[in-house]
Amino acid sequence: MGEGKAMFTHFRGRYRYARRRAVVAVQVAVLMVALLGFAALTFDLGALYNTRSDLQRSADAAALAAAAKLSEYADGNAVNLARQAAVDYVDHNPVFGRRLSLDPAADVTFGRATYNRATQQYDFAPTDVVPDAVHVRLRHTEGSPNGPVPLYFARIFGMMTTELSTEAMAVMMPRDIAIVADLSGSHNDDSEFRNYQSTDINLWNVWDSLPGGAGEIGASWDIGSFPPGWVEADGSTPQAAGPAWGYFHKLGYGTNPIASTYNPTTDAGLVRLIYNQNWSNAELSTYIAARGYSAAEVSAIMNKQYDPSGAYPFRVAVALGLAYWNSGIAGGLWQTRGAPAGNANTWISASELEWTEPIMGRSLADSSNIWLDYINNYVNKTNTEMYDANSNLRYRFGVKTFVNYLMEKRSSHALTPEFASTPTQPMQAVKEAVAYMMDQIDALDTDDQVSLEIYGTTAHHEMDLTHNHQMVSDRLTVMQSNHYDSWTNVGGGVQKGIDELTSSRARGSSRKVMVLLTDGKANVNASGGTNDEPGGAAYAVDRVNAAIALGIRVFAVSVGAESDQSLMQQLADIAQGEHFHAEGSIEEYSGQLSDIFGRLAGTRAVQLIR
Picture: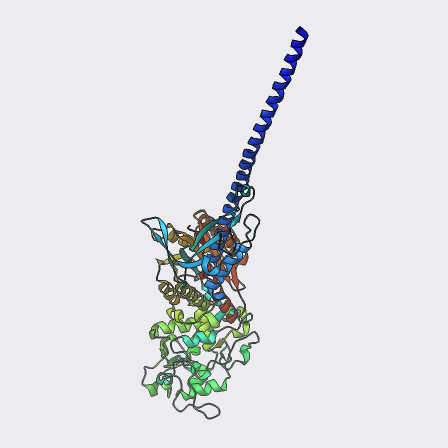
């Protein structure tokens, strides 16, 4: 009896265990369905999350790429370029492993974005006319080029697809731009003899643009230019050939253009009058006699006798017709003119001269000092850039050497302001390039502000940040090489740019940009010391480092073979900008500079605003 009971109890225990296992199996089966549902939901939710993230990333990239093209009108229709950029960027940015497409007509919208200070957001007004912003919509929906988003495990619940879409808006950021221009003395070098071996210098164009140049022919040409009845060797009447500077008018300009093969010894526009030598130029002596001088006076003018005693510059001035010599010699020109008598000997002295040829409106007293400096301290010397260029230019007088003298020795605005209206190079090319940049900024209808900073030995703030870009161009147009002083203080110029871009006129929401230009080498140190290239370069690097610390991006532009390209590249690298270089002939670098400044006009930072 006890044994049967035990067997029953054992059977009942096994039955209960089996029943529990069956219950657990049912529970597991039920839970597996739930777990599979959760797994399906988790996978699909993850896929949707990643898809949405990829959609936004792709839309952001497309909007930024499109906005960056909105300033590239030089490459074609900027709106079309921008629309294509949006399409391309979506195509190259897969979404959850799939390559999607934009409907360029429906999904890409251009407009103008204006910052609303009240809402602290940008208001967007759709327009295809010079837009500065782009709105991109990327759809993964029914009716879109990409269709709806496919689901996976959720299909067991009858959910086959869902829809996702996103949008992005990017705008070209307004800029505060400091134009930092080098106006050192070297900005007229390509119009001077010093560079005729490397480029066809445009000295003639500079002369022609000065008051009294070749383009101003009138009655005044005859005043003091030729003696009455003077004719050329072939019997023709002399033709107007330049300012009424005595014998210069007879000589004319001579050889043009001045290229690497130029030979001063064969230039009919120059006359050689050597110190302490008798002059045997028959045409010159004929000219002097035709002015009314007696034979004795002509002989004295052509004679070297008193050159060592200081007569040389005065006899040159008389020979060239820049002054009358009131010699006091019986029967001389002074009697015919009724002028006071001189010392009656053949020594031409300063007190016997009556100056007749003013220089571009200056008084005769001022002009006489300039003429004498040109004669005695320039053409007569060997320590000039003109002599270094070609030693045969020594002692040769004429329009060329005089205009070259003005550019080399009197180029500042204080001494010869007339140069501001002449095409001295590369100054003229810089003026034209900046003007082109201002025109391009205006054409893009941006919200950019521009200032003008100038540097030579010292640095000067010329114009406050302004939306009137034409004023910036106009101001630079009336300036000139060596406007204030002649050395190259790159660091000082950068500091002036920093000062303006951090002033109250600069806007907190704008991108800060500096366009730094030079044609030479930094040679002014932080203490203002000149002729210090290592110190000048160190000062420039220090100030550009200060600029980058303030978020200012620097674009460096160098022009000409003598510019320090390595330093300009270093400065651009420090400031996360670019270095551009132009050189070659005047025509070549003029075109290059216009292209560079046109590109700078359109180099706009873009930013997502939605």
